[in-house]
Length: 472
Image (tube, rainbow, N blue to C red; front, side, top):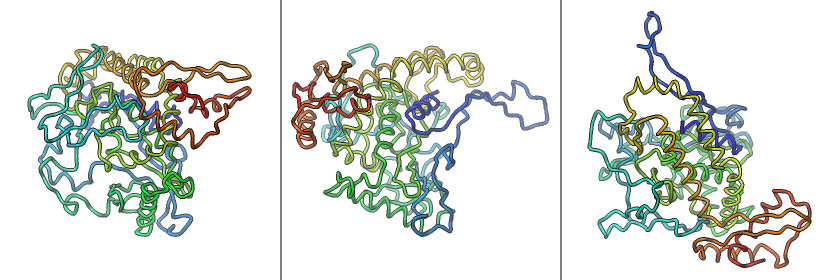
């Protein structure tokens, strides 16, 4: 259900994601009559991420197209687990599981330019203390406790692997685990990407070089001194709104695989780089016992380094990017991310599965058992659904409290904006907000007649001013 729900949210945001269907599968490899002995359970049938006018709508790049402008697109590439050569280095069970500790000195990181309340960030782990930074004491019954790591059981059920490039303490060279035909690595930030469309055995050497050069030029602009310049900075290379939407979807659902695995990008001919579509969202909505995935509070991204969390720390150093992020959150919170809408859809999906789930759990004896790397263990399907709904409600509420509240707007010939006082201090961010407002806006008060919702959204700077007791 988590994949289905996340993809639906993305489509409602205006970002294509795979369409899905719940199906009951029977497998019969003989000529005998089909029966329940052939029953394989409930599955989600999903569209593949493919280049198509109804999916990722970009131009087809043919092997013969090796000059401008044709060579500029379309491309689809991704960040993911390493390729087919990786598992030769691991034991038969594969890479480390999600429950494996990921505490590193300096992580989780502080907010940097991220436009949220600094109080919503855990302190960084310090290796010298030789201890793990614990989550704060639970203050409400709605917040789950930290998961207990189960005893090793080679026969325990699993849903999938959540892996790093190699187990801790084992040094593996790039030459050993990476095949150069499958991927390219950016020069400045050493980000690694896999070819998807054209595939690795179809893309030409000239096209490989062009795509790598485009990403390199983007990183040079992003980390350069004029990175906020509209013509010379990062905005000339990427569709910033697609990055914002992807980031919001990740954090609302807290998908612990996102940013680092199954993370897609695409570029159309003559167009800019887009982030998406979303893929592989089962370890989300509280369904993970690693990366703090079970917790409805706190951000996912501070736990990741810059090669896992590619480019975003620098993007959020641009005040305009940060402001667009908060504006987009406020917009989506009124519809796509409204708790009532999401919970109602979960009830619809649960009702559709109510009959078939009994057959599924009759086939697969996993209800009431710990399934690695899931966190919550429920005794019934309704209990699973209720737990997820509570998690989502708490998650949305927590995120809402990390940003300045949206202003209340009174209709009329003159806009009047008012907002409630902030419940916690965000003075550092407010100081940055005042500084950029002084740079971007004239000092006189702005008025509008018959304002549209878009015009109101464009005046978001009023929101932080009202919250801080300052008017432009």
